[in-house]
Image (tube, rainbow, N blue to C red; front, side, top):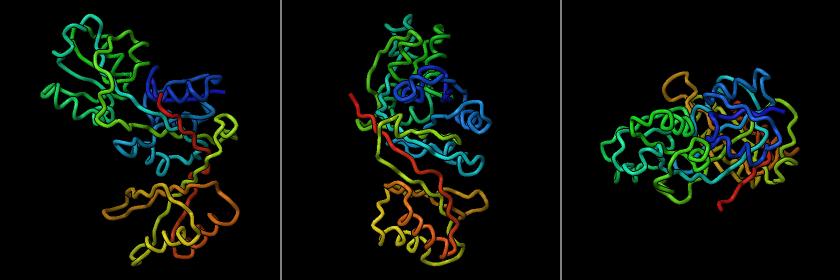
Amino acid sequence: MKVGYLGPKATFSELPVKMVFSEFAAVPYRTIAECIDAAADQEVDLVVVPLENALEGTVNITLDYLTHVVQLPIVGEITIPVKQHLMVHPANAEKWQEVSKIYSHSHAIAQCYQFLHKHFKGVPLESVSSTAQAALMVMNTPEINAAAIANEYAAKEYGLALVARNIHDFDYNHTRFVILSDKEIDFETISGSSHYKTTLMVTLPSDQAGALHQVLSAFAWRKLNLSKIESRPMKTGIGNYFFIIDVQMKLDEVLIPGAIAEMEALGCSVRILGSYPALMVESD
C-alpha cells in the first residue's frame, strides 16, 4: 500500500502518515493538488492532505479541489497538534537574530504573526509550498542567512539549528488532515478510532428566502449535532455559494438520509463527501 502526502520529507503532512500509516510506503508530492491527483490517477492507494487549521481556518485549495475538480471520498481524519519553531543553518546560529529572510508555508507564517512582528519587523517573509521545503531551502543556502518556520522533525531531518521554539501565537494550534481514497480503506481498524463524522456539500436553491434556516432545521429537529458549517464560492458568479456541513455521527439508515431527503425536497442539491472515523492525537 502507498500513501501520498505533501512533501518533501518532514512536513507537517508527513507526521500523521508516520503516526498512523507507518507500515505503508510514503510518497511525497510537491503540492496538495498533485497529492490528490495521485490518488485519483491510482498512483497511490490513499493520500493525507491538510483541510483545516485551528488558527487559520480552512485550507481552501484542498476543499476547492474536492468540490470542483475530483470526487474522491474522505475515508478518515487525523487531527494533530502543530508546534512551529524557528530554525537556521548551523553556520548562522550565532547571528540568527540578524536573518535577512524567513521562509515558510503561508499558513505557518500567519500562525506566527505576533512573534514575527515583534522580533523580525521589516524582514521579508517568503511563502513556499511547505514548511519542510522552507527548511530545505535554508539548509541549501547558508550564505543567505535565512530562517525557516517548520517543525522539530524538519530541523533534525535537514540538520538545522533550532533557535526559537513554539513561536505560534496561540497555544491551541492543531491541524486537521483528511485521508482521501476511492479504495476500501478500513481506517477505523487502522486508527483505532470509533468517533465518526459525515461531511455534506449542500447547494441551496436560488432566490428562496429562508432556505438556509430550513436546511439547519432539518438537522436540528433530528438532534443531529453539527461541528462545522462553512460557505464556499461556487465560482459561477458573485453571491453564489454552497455550504460544507460536518455532522458529528456516522452515516446511518434513518437520520442523515432523512435530513438529506428533506433538504432535497426543499430544492437543495446534496453530495456526501464522506462518512469516516476521526482520530484526535493529543499534544505531549
